[in-house]
Length: 177
Image (cartoon, rainbow, N blue to C red; front, side, top):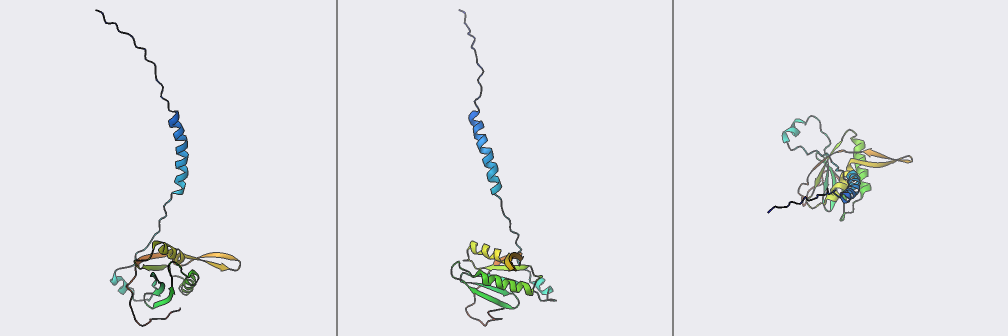
Protein backbone atom coordinates (compact mmCIF):
# COMPACT_ATOMS: atom_id res chain seq x y z
CA UNK A 1 0.00 0.00 0.00
CA UNK A 2 1.28 3.28 -0.93
CA UNK A 3 0.87 6.22 1.31
CA UNK A 4 -0.14 9.21 -0.51
CA UNK A 5 1.30 12.32 0.70
CA UNK A 6 -0.61 15.26 -0.09
CA UNK A 7 1.19 18.42 -0.49
CA UNK A 8 -0.20 20.84 1.89
CA UNK A 9 -0.28 24.23 0.51
CA UNK A 10 0.80 26.65 3.13
CA UNK A 11 -0.09 30.20 2.67
CA UNK A 12 2.05 32.84 4.23
CA UNK A 13 0.17 34.44 7.05
CA UNK A 14 0.74 38.15 7.56
CA UNK A 15 0.77 39.58 11.02
CA UNK A 16 -1.93 42.15 11.60
CA UNK A 17 -0.21 44.86 13.61
CA UNK A 18 -2.67 47.61 12.87
CA UNK A 19 -4.12 47.54 16.39
CA UNK A 20 -0.63 47.65 17.90
CA UNK A 21 0.38 50.59 15.72
CA UNK A 22 -2.78 52.46 16.72
CA UNK A 23 -1.89 51.92 20.37
CA UNK A 24 1.64 53.25 19.86
CA UNK A 25 0.40 56.28 17.97
CA UNK A 26 -1.72 57.21 20.99
CA UNK A 27 0.60 56.04 23.77
CA UNK A 28 3.89 57.67 22.71
CA UNK A 29 2.60 61.29 22.56
CA UNK A 30 0.72 60.77 25.82
CA UNK A 31 3.90 59.63 27.58
CA UNK A 32 5.89 62.51 26.12
CA UNK A 33 3.32 65.07 27.26
CA UNK A 34 3.06 63.73 30.82
CA UNK A 35 6.84 63.42 31.19
CA UNK A 36 7.16 67.21 31.02
CA UNK A 37 4.83 67.71 33.99
CA UNK A 38 6.34 65.11 36.30
CA UNK A 39 9.42 66.92 37.55
CA UNK A 40 10.80 66.46 41.01
CA UNK A 41 11.76 69.49 43.03
CA UNK A 42 14.74 69.15 45.33
CA UNK A 43 15.20 71.47 48.27
CA UNK A 44 18.71 71.75 49.61
CA UNK A 45 18.67 71.85 53.40
CA UNK A 46 21.49 72.29 55.86
CA UNK A 47 21.38 70.43 59.13
CA UNK A 48 22.15 72.43 62.26
CA UNK A 49 25.60 71.99 63.75
CA UNK A 50 25.49 69.38 66.49
CA UNK A 51 29.11 69.65 67.50
CA UNK A 52 29.50 71.77 70.65
CA UNK A 53 33.25 72.06 70.10
CA UNK A 54 32.65 73.92 66.86
CA UNK A 55 30.50 76.45 68.72
CA UNK A 56 33.19 76.98 71.37
CA UNK A 57 35.83 77.62 68.71
CA UNK A 58 33.67 80.33 67.10
CA UNK A 59 33.42 82.46 70.27
CA UNK A 60 35.63 85.16 68.79
CA UNK A 61 32.62 86.90 67.21
CA UNK A 62 29.00 86.64 68.26
CA UNK A 63 26.84 85.98 65.23
CA UNK A 64 23.13 86.00 64.66
CA UNK A 65 21.72 82.48 64.92
CA UNK A 66 18.19 83.05 63.73
CA UNK A 67 15.62 80.38 64.59
CA UNK A 68 11.91 80.05 63.90
CA UNK A 69 10.17 77.78 66.42
CA UNK A 70 6.91 76.52 64.94
CA UNK A 71 4.36 75.30 67.45
CA UNK A 72 0.65 74.46 66.94
CA UNK A 73 -0.41 77.65 68.75
CA UNK A 74 2.45 80.07 67.94
CA UNK A 75 5.39 80.90 65.71
CA UNK A 76 8.35 82.24 67.66
CA UNK A 77 11.16 84.12 65.95
CA UNK A 78 14.27 84.09 68.13
CA UNK A 79 18.01 84.32 68.21
CA UNK A 80 19.89 81.44 69.82
CA UNK A 81 22.07 83.91 71.76
CA UNK A 82 19.62 86.70 72.64
CA UNK A 83 16.30 84.90 72.99
CA UNK A 84 12.82 85.67 71.70
CA UNK A 85 12.55 88.47 69.14
CA UNK A 86 8.86 88.13 68.25
CA UNK A 87 6.04 85.74 69.09
CA UNK A 88 3.10 85.39 66.70
CA UNK A 89 0.05 83.57 67.99
CA UNK A 90 -1.82 81.37 65.54
CA UNK A 91 -5.13 79.59 65.59
CA UNK A 92 -5.26 76.46 63.45
CA UNK A 93 -3.65 77.17 60.09
CA UNK A 94 -4.17 80.95 60.27
CA UNK A 95 -0.93 82.89 60.53
CA UNK A 96 -0.45 86.65 60.15
CA UNK A 97 2.08 86.48 57.31
CA UNK A 98 2.36 90.28 56.96
CA UNK A 99 3.74 90.71 60.48
CA UNK A 100 5.97 87.64 60.08
CA UNK A 101 7.44 89.01 56.83
CA UNK A 102 7.82 92.49 58.33
CA UNK A 103 9.84 91.13 61.27
CA UNK A 104 12.03 89.06 58.92
CA UNK A 105 12.66 92.14 56.78
CA UNK A 106 13.69 94.12 59.88
CA UNK A 107 16.14 91.40 60.89
CA UNK A 108 17.50 91.25 57.33
CA UNK A 109 18.08 95.03 57.26
CA UNK A 110 20.04 94.80 60.54
CA UNK A 111 22.05 91.76 59.40
CA UNK A 112 22.24 91.96 55.57
CA UNK A 113 25.06 89.41 55.28
CA UNK A 114 23.16 86.70 57.19
CA UNK A 115 21.73 83.95 54.96
CA UNK A 116 21.02 81.09 57.36
CA UNK A 117 17.94 80.30 59.43
CA UNK A 118 16.85 77.23 61.39
CA UNK A 119 13.25 76.04 61.43
CA UNK A 120 12.51 74.15 64.64
CA UNK A 121 9.23 72.24 64.43
CA UNK A 122 6.97 70.79 67.05
CA UNK A 123 5.99 67.20 66.31
CA UNK A 124 2.33 68.09 65.78
CA UNK A 125 2.97 70.76 63.11
CA UNK A 126 1.74 69.81 59.65
CA UNK A 127 3.94 69.47 56.58
CA UNK A 128 1.90 72.17 54.83
CA UNK A 129 2.79 74.67 57.56
CA UNK A 130 6.48 73.77 57.25
CA UNK A 131 6.46 74.45 53.50
CA UNK A 132 4.55 77.73 53.97
CA UNK A 133 7.05 78.98 56.55
CA UNK A 134 9.96 77.79 54.41
CA UNK A 135 8.65 79.76 51.42
CA UNK A 136 8.13 82.91 53.51
CA UNK A 137 11.61 82.68 55.07
CA UNK A 138 13.50 82.34 51.78
CA UNK A 139 12.13 85.43 50.06
CA UNK A 140 9.53 88.18 50.33
CA UNK A 141 7.72 90.50 47.96
CA UNK A 142 8.38 94.16 48.76
CA UNK A 143 6.64 97.12 47.14
CA UNK A 144 9.13 99.72 45.89
CA UNK A 145 7.64 102.83 44.29
CA UNK A 146 5.18 101.29 41.81
CA UNK A 147 6.64 97.83 41.35
CA UNK A 148 6.83 94.67 43.43
CA UNK A 149 10.34 93.33 44.00
CA UNK A 150 11.16 89.86 45.29
CA UNK A 151 13.82 90.22 48.03
CA UNK A 152 15.98 87.32 49.14
CA UNK A 153 15.85 86.89 52.93
CA UNK A 154 17.36 83.70 54.34
CA UNK A 155 17.87 81.06 51.60
CA UNK A 156 19.95 78.62 53.70
CA UNK A 157 17.26 76.77 55.64
CA UNK A 158 17.99 74.20 58.35
CA UNK A 159 15.34 71.98 59.89
CA UNK A 160 15.28 70.52 63.39
CA UNK A 161 13.05 69.56 66.30
CA UNK A 162 11.66 72.27 68.52
CA UNK A 163 12.86 72.33 72.13
CA UNK A 164 10.40 71.30 74.80
CA UNK A 165 8.11 74.08 75.91
CA UNK A 166 8.75 75.41 79.40
CA UNK A 167 5.70 76.19 81.52
CA UNK A 168 7.00 79.38 83.11
CA UNK A 169 10.12 81.45 82.97
CA UNK A 170 11.32 85.03 82.77
CA UNK A 171 11.23 86.66 79.34
CA UNK A 172 14.66 87.13 77.86
CA UNK A 173 14.54 90.05 75.45
CA UNK A 174 10.93 90.96 75.06
CA UNK A 175 8.05 90.58 72.71
CA UNK A 176 9.23 92.94 69.99
CA UNK A 177 12.37 93.84 68.15
